Length: 316
Image (cartoon, rainbow, N blue to C red; front, side):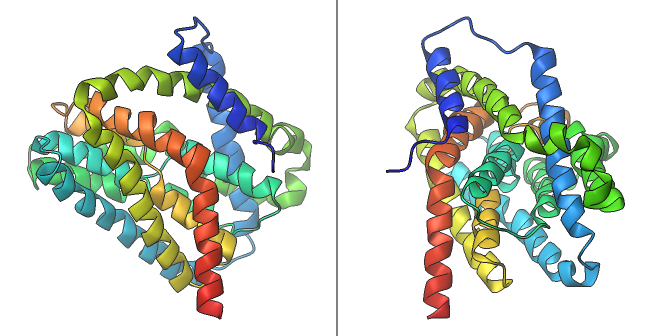
């Protein structure tokens, strides 16, 4: 039996410590620094590979993935309104979280794939960035409609100039411009230490996840069920789309992972500006308290196995 990946054990350490109310906390400056390095590393890796491809080849994939990003919140919203009986603003906010993506989940998937020598298409870093945006716009429209009172300028600033987007796009552009040879000098920091940095990041994520468990007790079992069922459905959509686009098994599994993830950074910030009446605890309890640990502990291997089966079935 394969041993559990050490980065997952770091997440479990943080989760257990948080549940036991340990005073363990990662200093804010350290967490910020590690997050910046991870985001830049993801962007740099993608940029190196993107330099070898043409925009014409990527355009169909970009358009298809954007369409998925617009569609997922529209699927989640009526479920949250009808079955969950959430008020309109809360349902729209949660739906936006589940239409967007989790950079942390993507980073774990990169490490998981890398440790097993599973290749995937380099443009996944670009698709990660693009999938941050559509769900935010859909969530705002679902909550407010196309209103003149919506602060679209502030929303655009938060969406396109938020820390995560700037670092990911910046890393992509630097990697694209410098190439692999140009990045040799900084390779030890951004590439060789990637899994170590991810382990520290996941320790803090475990502590944060433990802090959301109390909200799940307060708001009932529905969010717990939704936090697992929605990723499974989205992963199925991502798998089908990856196969239809002709991605490799690894690329299909990675797209399924992106589809199954839920935002806990970019979307909360944008919703706070545009839909301030929405309760952020509900969204974070589901995305961070349920979906993130589910994907990290169970989902990623499951999505890869699904991609293998789909490609084998289609190929056979």
